[in-house]
Image 1 (tube, helix red, strand yellow):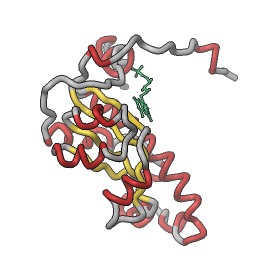
Image 2 (cartoon, rainbow, N blue to C red):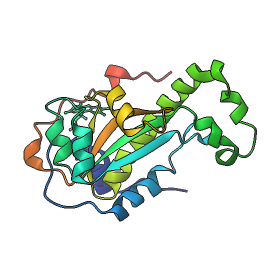
Image 3 (cartoon, helix red, strand yellow):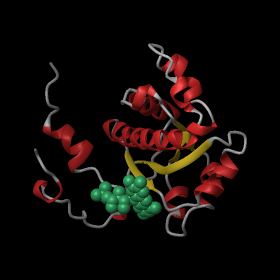
Image 4 (tube, rainbow, N blue to C red):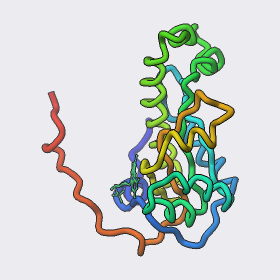
Length: 199
Ligand SMILES: Cc1cc2nc3c(=O)[nH]c(=O)nc-3n(C[C@H](O)[C@H](O)[C@H](O)COP(=O)(O)O)c2cc1C
């Protein structure tokens, strides 16, 4: 039986982890990006859909290319980060289901033009979950994150996914070693009774 993680691990993943706006001058290697993916892919998705498609913008050119589509305040958060990941979703994720979910014919649940709206819901839900797994995996590996949705999704899709028109960006996430000087005080978090009910 699994045991609860030590308090220090819970601090690193949740209590002391922050969303960073600025970054220390310390590289993140391709090996580290692979390590993030090797953990995040183990997180659950509906019928093991794995709809997330990640583009890791690591070169200065790639980060600049992405930043031009972001809000003015988000642009330096992208260009100064060691890496900025585009967390996208594949609206044709069902084509991979024969090998991703081999126990049954799950592809047929989502195939066809009339199922596009269903696929959009499924892909958004599960790629968002995978984005969260990505952030927690990065934190577990000693990295920090700066998630952002303040960018022009359609413009990013047109530029980065011209060859894959069924890929749609969900959110982007800067990754690196966070600069403590770049964040303000922690915003309040609600107590259990505020937004929870146990029936
Ligand atoms: C999906 C998502 C989108 C976000 N978009 C932006 C953004 O466009 N720009 C920004 O500066 N912060 C953005 N944030 C950061 C949030 O404001 C931040 O995570 C939240 O205030 C909690 O901060 P903390 O983790 O430091 O407690 C986003 C966070 C998430 C999860």
